[in-house]
Image (cartoon, rainbow, N blue to C red):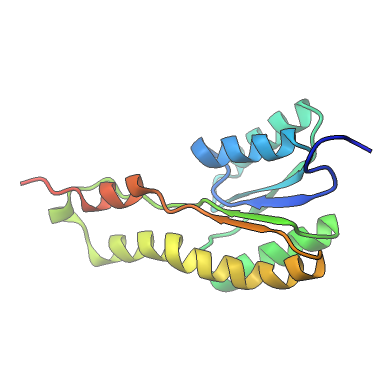
Length: 157
């Protein structure tokens, strides 16, 4: 048995193809967790993270789903639990940033950002809870970056 703190645990990291999500996925894997690397659409980014985890001796897989789509996220979380036999950690990191001046921002842009961050957290927690309870407990981490909101709301006059 490994002496790593997260050995035998399974983690999902949303938005794990780049930036903070990638770093979180790599850190969880380094501590022994099997990591489900989630991205909305860029499977190439997710596959790169999985290769990096595997090259370091860890276990990971690519799981595509838009966190703002409740049924898709439910299906992805269920697929992870089925593939790895459990779920212990859910990191809701996915974000949507439209880097437009506020005066050019559409309501649809605003809703997409809010849906990814807020609705995604709701859908993710609801989908993960039965699996976490079945595993005897777990951890849920949500990130709602100020940068995402500041980029949406930056006003240029």
